[in-house]
Amino acid sequence: MPTRSFYWQPLARQVRVRGPVVREDAERSAADFLARSAEALVGRQNRPLASLAERDAAVADAAARLARDPELVPAAWTLHTVRAESVEFWQGAEDRNHTRLAYRRSGAGWTKELRWP
Image 1 (spheres, helix red, strand yellow):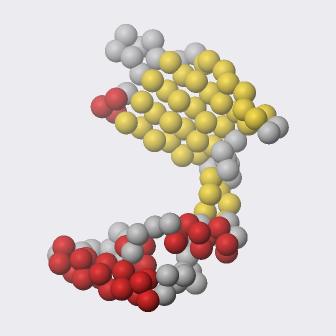
Image 2: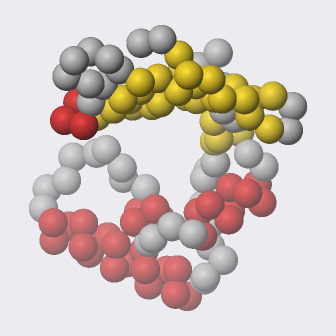
């Protein structure tokens, strides 16, 4: 089962989420895309960018396309969701008396427990 941890060292905080990643249906994927900015339509995330002017021109072009067709959703756009089965919050302390709270899915709700550091 996939585990994702998010650690913020300056705040001594961590969140760990465990659960399956599922592909959502076309309707939810479309709703997710339409809730985003025009940058999502550009679709160049994580690629090298020559200049901010290049980005601005691409975003302006995408915004114009969305203005012409407000329901435009790229066919390849897919929403993936982590269906959390457990979530843990960790708060570090200088004296090493850390606080850990764990939540586990229990039927339709969640159970909470305090854990040893």
